[in-house]
Image (cartoon, rainbow, N blue to C red; front, top):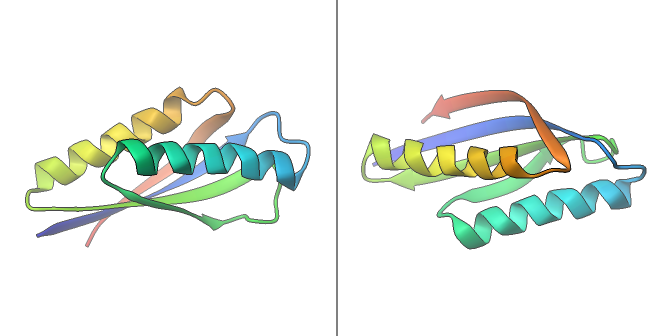
Length: 93
């Protein structure tokens, strides 16, 4: 069994309030949960309106399958127009 966790710092361009930020974060989290086999949550900067940290985790029988799934999640995040990924930290457990 292989487990990996990716922490991503994101900058949310157009957010003018926490409500705007949460709308963008919720959109990203919902898409990841619906389309991919990952767990995702906002884990830091909840009260800062242009910054977010998302933590994405995946479990699988092979390291390659886990890495592929997490890379798909990062690609989905990168394609989102309203947020930019700034820092990314991978951790294998």
